[in-house]
Length: 209
Image (cartoon, rainbow, N blue to C red):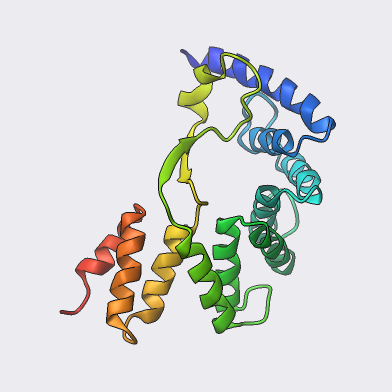
């Protein structure tokens, strides 16, 4: 399938997602937000993506809160506000969005937008790391009509089945334990390596014997 056909299918998906989002479907709002962020089938518009993620987050959609936190953290489509980003990651983490737990832990460790809290950061890193399971291919746009599989080569991404950020959390724990508990550090690096985080595999190779 050529890209012209892919664009047509993205436009069709955007139309259906817009209708579903207007009807209160948070998954459709997330799908449409991603399309605006990427410029798939709609005009590239970060501010519009933020508004859609906000709508879904207000409906207690943890994924949307996580993505909204990213927008505030990076200042993409909205003024940069690390305190707001941390609050959104907290909300998303409570909603079992593993990546948000990792990002909140990272913020707590460095004191970005929140008071520095090493103990809480370690707790959240461990929570995220413990969720590491496997990777599977998922489609980040809602499949609401037959023929969506035609778009897969243009729209699919690799993510952790348990949530992106789990392997990174294991890596962070490996760094923390290195020099304090080498056995524990190796265990965390190995888990991150098994989670397909190549840098963690390198850390294992560079460990002192």
